[in-house]
Image (tube, rainbow, N blue to C red; front, side, top):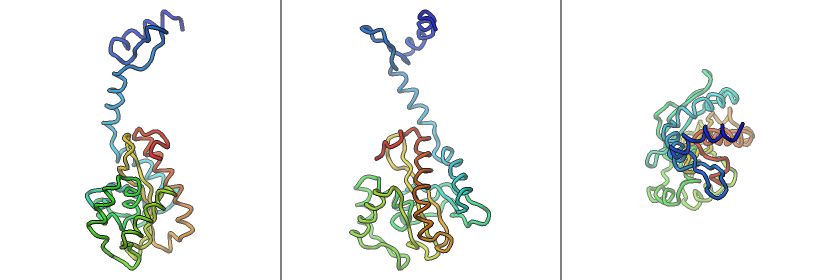
Length: 219
């Protein structure tokens, strides 16, 4: 493209501030209006809409019930669910104390320390023999989640449910949700959990990218 054509096309972008031109070198770069445009795009993104396709694909590939969970207070709340007809789904709106939920632990592990402190102050109420109720053990569990990139809840809220989940980050690099896969212990044996953990984390990373976060930005 000729220089005159480039200058003609760039003129309205310069006028609106989408581009600026370096007076010394003559080179173009993005202007301040580009930031406002980007923020407007990020503001209109809806977590559920971005996650839905990925959640359906995960359910199709695994054959298990899959869900998107957000944090409300000290509860992990199911915001979206997907799964085959034969897979029992977590109903949307279901609330589980965050410390007994794989998705809750995935969010806490990458969230601010004061959030974990608040959960610990409220007490780690027991639901099953597998519930982690000791604060030191719970902090150690969150450190394991950070190292491997996904969380596991092994019959900690319901003796008939095992779950693996990974965090989803927004464009501010904050954990805003988690993607989880749940099944009975028989349907989701420990070996299967180890296999699914990285896969669930990869799906969570794709949703994160859809929300405008650069890959690896949260690490």
